[in-house]
Each structure stands twice: as C-alpha cells, then as structure tokens.
Length: 127
Image (cartoon, rainbow, N blue to C red; front, side, top):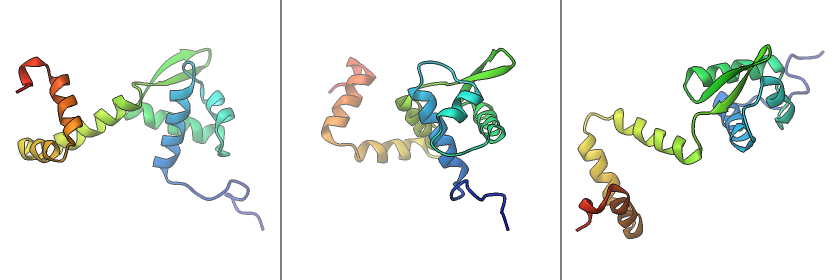
C-alpha cells in the first residue's frame, strides 16, 4: 500500500525547507521562479509546495518578487549578514528592557568584537 509521502524522504520542518530555499536563492545569480527553485533543490518538493513556501517567505518579508512571464521570480531581501542582523533586532525588539539586553550582549563580546563595534558606531564612541 502506498502512502502520500512515499519516495519523498523524511518529513522536514518548514523552517528547514525555508532555510534550504533561502540558501539556494542567496547563491543564485538572480531571482528564480518556483520552477527554477524546484529544479535546483536537493529535496524532492513538488512545484506546488515550492510555490507555497516561496509565498509564505514573501509574506514574512524574507523575499521580494517580480513578475516574470506568468510566474513570479523570487530573490532574498538581503544577504546572510543582513538576515542575522534582522534576527538580532527582532530579539531586541521583543524584550521590554532593551538597555539590559544590550548591556548583557556588550558584556559578552570579546575584546576584538567590542573594538569592532566601537569602530562601527563611529569615532565619537571610542574612549
């Protein structure tokens, strides 16, 4: 008796699928259509599943999309460091005491990271 998932490998969490697609899009030379994404994926996701994931990622503002023929072509809104910065900002914004969070973050930085942060904040921040 055949099951709907037969031949597709183990079920993976949506976050893993999104991460795989995001990585693929970040490595692409330009925006990709769902068909192009499905062709390049190592997993065996159906076209409709890829469309659903891309649409969800666009709704989350992780991707931009532009019309290409009858389909949309998707591209990441930023690169990997940009996404890491967005996650850091999101964590900070979700906490009621920003000062305490920033202080703990700064206390945990290595000397070289603290120096880099001072440099990035500008010359007025250096002691």
